[in-house]
Length: 254
View 1 (cartoon, rainbow, N blue to C red):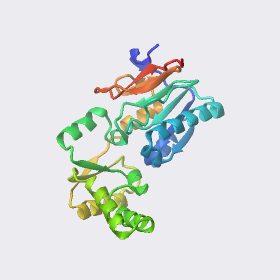
View 2 (cartoon, rainbow, N blue to C red):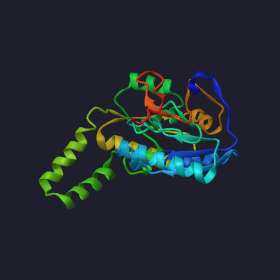
View 3 (cartoon, rainbow, N blue to C red):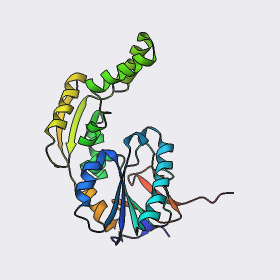
View 4 (cartoon, one colour):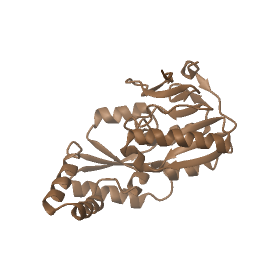
């Protein structure tokens, strides 16, 4: 059975949540108002650097959460994220995930808004409070840290070359956009994004976030247009279209 054939999937009585570290603050705050959420587990941001490792870690965590909390469903607060969700499968209960290319979609409120921003301004690099906190946002602090790390491992010429390659990887960007969901005082994070934009010679803009997609992911019920429901025996695959991802039966070994 393909859950995407249904127009609405009901809210479970017991929901477990696995979330990326980038959305830790937002997820933990919104989950407090959801009595059906029985567990929130935060996964390290560095999993994104190795998609296969991310898939393995999620599969392991899904099995652990099912055994520990016996949820009726598990919500993954991730985007497709460099194909890190490909191959993640539902095991004992359904898994639900927003149809999102990456976590920016969860801040902007819909895949349509994300695609529109990408189409109109493909040169935009997105900053969020959680992304800033991970220390991976480009800027003077990150590159000073990288320079120190490279200098400790390599000679000065090679360290400078590696820094140059890191900078070249940002050459297609011209704008730093800061977006948040209106949680607490974000002035420090916004100031950090502005500082990075100035240091990199980029334009800066402030975007208004939309928390509805994230809240609906945590609360349900889930419509098939915005959410992918993965039933046991199915796994996530890239759909290569506007729906972002799809659920397909797990291939049988042999």
